[in-house]
Length: 222
Ligand code: SF4
Ligand code: SF4
Image (cartoon, rainbow, N blue to C red; front, side, top):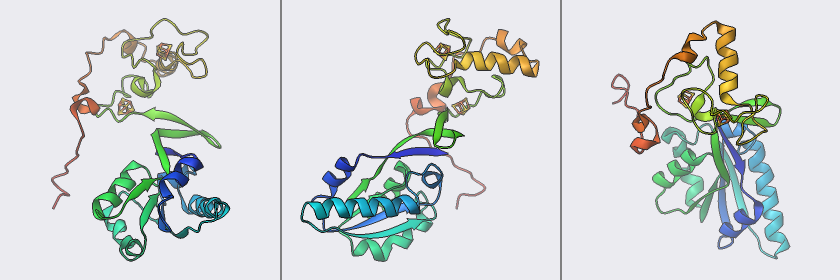
């Protein structure tokens, strides 16, 4: 899923200062799972903003709504009435959701309430870790299911850098060395021969190196 964290209150208050009536929009998908921008977080932020403005002797009217998916134009249409009555919008979705609102409602200022972070998985309650960078040419089948792009600090494709100590990464000793994990997994799977194979230089055009990407499914596109 896409992970995100709420921005600091001071930053949110600052961008809403010129307004008296806003629409606060959450999303029921990834940001709900990582407790950053679902219905519950919309309610919490709404109360916190109103209290902060009250302390300054101002009022901020907030209408709350949480969409099924903010990155989908079909659901964005549900905002039409509410948005017409608001001076500005604050979105608690990832950057995709914020941009969908900006695209549909060109005349309305839209502010992100969260910092979109990475594609990750839940390690334990309240802890998410980066797992994929969407490189567009997945090598997990070769590396035993451990991603060298997202999990090796140097994005090495042909073995470790040599700086790892007791299985930890030399760049950040709090994280496991990805290549230690890859090697352990290759051994467990009996595919150690993959470790000896040289992976060719990666074509980063399938990743962000080729600019913004689009997927077109001819069978689905109208
Ligand atoms: S190899 Fe690429 S697509 Fe596969 S998990 Fe890593 S970043 Fe994601
Ligand atoms: S210690 Fe391991 S994870 Fe860290 S940069 Fe070197 S090979 Fe990559």
